[in-house]
Amino acid sequence: MSAGYEYIGNIPEYLVAKWGSLPDDSAIDKTVQSLQKNSIKAYIANDKEEAKNLVASFIPKGAEVWTSTSITLRETGIMQLLDESGEYISIRKKVFAISDPVQRLNARRATATTKYVVGSVHAVTQDGVVLIASMTGSQLPYYAYSSENVIWVVGAQKIVHSINDGFKRIEEYCAPLEDLRAKKESGTGTSINKILIIKKENIADRLKMIIVKERLGF
Image (tube, rainbow, N blue to C red; front, top):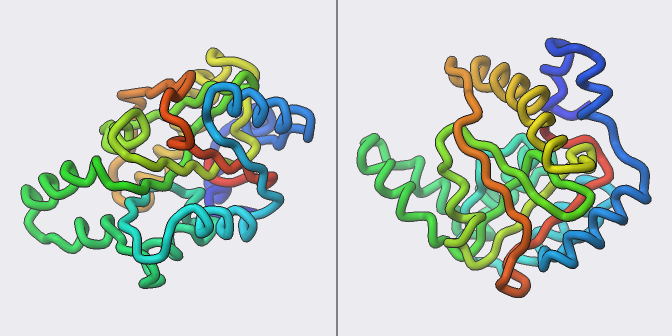
């Protein structure tokens, strides 16, 4: 059981079954094909280790990289690889080493043009639309435009049929679980303040998504 699933028992079982179950291979294959048509390069990984190896193959050693806050990145070991191994220049580590809150915020905003960003999403539709929800919006500029290379690692349970289902998944499942996690880890909850929807990318090879055949994150 993944680390993120310690919170599952606090929400109704029917929502866990509805939004936390893995799809069959045909749904995964259809999603990958749709993402490719929308100029989002898509890959399938059978497990966490394969996903981590794929991420490592996309980012040159010594490159600057920003890791978005993500249960998925923790569970796969990708955050530890990029931020703690010493093989990459962790911009997150540099920013959060700044003690002054104003300077740290300014430094955080300046990271938006980092060449490589790695994170996750909250829903991806079978016709290739990606949805990312946020309380602050801090990770959204990287994904929408500013970073040259965006890599998402996504548990296959996040695949949904439609954009409307994506909204429902975020509201009924992701947000309650993230609220529980945030309250436990930082003492403050969360709310759905901003949602980025990406239907297509017009810069070749900019966006990559690794769909993992495991339940990862929320």
